[in-house]
View (tube, one colour):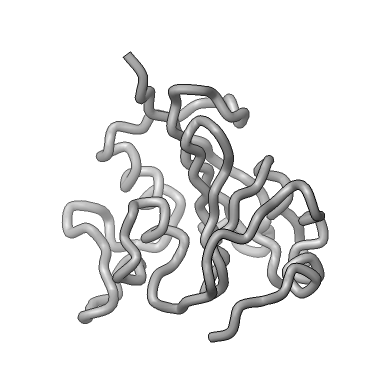
Length: 154
């Protein structure tokens, strides 16, 4: 897997522009966005898929639907919120769904400073907003359907 140049990323995600994102890693197919937001760079997290490089928590529904993805984060102490903004002292995860079938297509994480994403088998990026990955083109992730938060400060 080769890393994409900024001009190639911006072709796949037309809302990405110099200044609203930064590439943070080389491309790898070893882990996906769900693994990335869970701090796992060794596995590809996917419901119902098993094997040495695949993982999905055993106590979470094995269906690849929005409810299972929400359950995954709720069991980690996240709760649903309507606030899509970055908040200092608050971790957030944003669940994207495709326009075509409303199934989960991507998850991004905020550490209270910036949004972070793993782009499929591509690079990890930091991005200033959730909407830069939204859209209907082939590589865009659809829309943000749910945001969950967890307070990290005292």
